[in-house]
Image 1 (cartoon, rainbow, N blue to C red):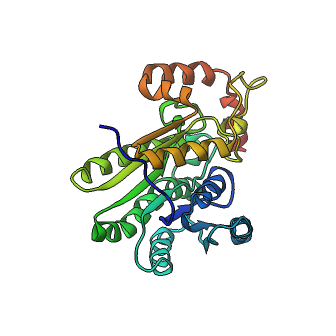
Image 2: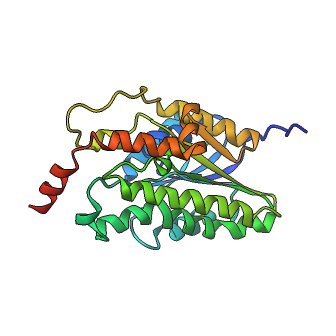
Length: 276
């Protein structure tokens, strides 16, 4: 039986990491569908520019919340402020904010920088979801969107913190979907592949020579459009571009890519630089 298309007009949506990249493009795309947005990120100036752009295009001006999700408790606070701003209800939460850290685990260990990556990529989505779920339960419906990464299946050297935090979020997302299986609250995992954003991890790795040839990254707007389509059709997972599905469904392929690519990463120099 084919599901009816979900109308996003008027939906109250909380979106983190909305100031740049995929998050910004999602905000614009959702606003064009008529959604009412609460956008959160650290850089309030960029959020206000986004809100101005939405408003000038004829959409409902997004509610701006400046928040540093590296700080424990910030995500729960965003949830409380968002509910107040939206009149106590929310239809969709999109945990899109992300942080990266490139370097050897033997040197970074569990430093404050490492903990911030997990705070943004794992604990904040869990905290924000927990803050908004009661409102969804009260009306019996809603959608939780967690943005992970294909890196969860391609464990490259020096990207262990990002990969581990996104893998943890992916597993938590699957578990949450099962926890809510007997409700009408949906859980959607968004798995972006190579996307042309500032967080593109392959550009941060110290290669022994030049970086390996890869397929060109896709524009954030195309990934955002895929997410909107996924929301409209009630999907449980959106993987974009489609070829990024391969390492997720065939883990051995992801490990092979990581092993081959890993041999081209200059891990020894990274260790020496970190030890100085």
